[in-house]
Image (tube, rainbow, N blue to C red; front, side, top):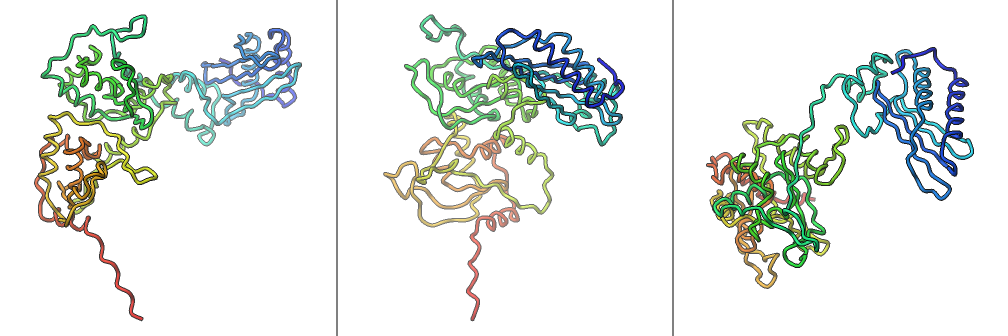
Length: 434
């Protein structure tokens, strides 16, 4: 780690770059045409990239000579300005035979491969002091915030190995039949962190039949895709034994709340991304879950009558056909949910019936009305499609039902009237008299 030296003049800065260029010309492998050099530093922590391309454009790594690293330290120290700090990012492109272009960054945080330790940020501010207005948020945050260990998230093995011809090997013992419903519920009710409507996965036990759609879920300790539940339900194949033991330890109950960092690390693990503290990925599904958690925690005004509306489908195609991407319920849970849906308070009755959008051969089957439990509003269509087509309710509504342990609450008169107003069409305005 160097300390500030007498400020370099622009000609002196250029002289150091020329010296680096001379070393490159002398030390770099013969036949080079281009060298990209990147030097990221904070405190005593340094990361470098040095990629050489030959005349055919083929890239390869080049180990930087120590002499170049020493010159870069001198350059950084000499470019310090009192109260303004010095650069933390340097990039240069050297082109044969000896031309170059350089770039410095004092404000932007480098895209670290591995996040520096807190003491490196603190050392940076000690060795190269900055005024508050000249200290970027990332640098101040790194110096002030204690870095906690990132959680370890595991992904289960679907099978116990494969044969030479890529057939699954299964040696794990089966789950007792009495535990299967609880395990399936666990696997299918943990928060979704990715929903892929296109593609799917191949059933390796049924001639590689394509099963459409995949949902990735996590409980904050394990992360798993749809096939884990699929192989258990269809073939009785237990999840990874270590994961199964974890589910049992949790008493088959998914945690009530999963920290954001666990969700984001889980997504990095399932997508084989490098887990980087400052670049943890996030998805729309994770953001939706976090919003739902925040909504549950938010205090409810005593006179608030805001209701959630349960979606019947997830959307529609350009042709108007329903789009559905929901995992089915177990038979046991289906009965509980149906009982809940039937027990809702009717707040608006309708006349007649509407077509079954999943079975055009049987039109005019679906009743019309609105029901409530004091928080959600839903139509009889939600029950109908669950009963006739095994279509689970809106995922957020289903989560709400599970949290109430499938027991519908009592709805008072004020709430019932507010629910009626919420679903009653507003009267059209009469024409203004001329």
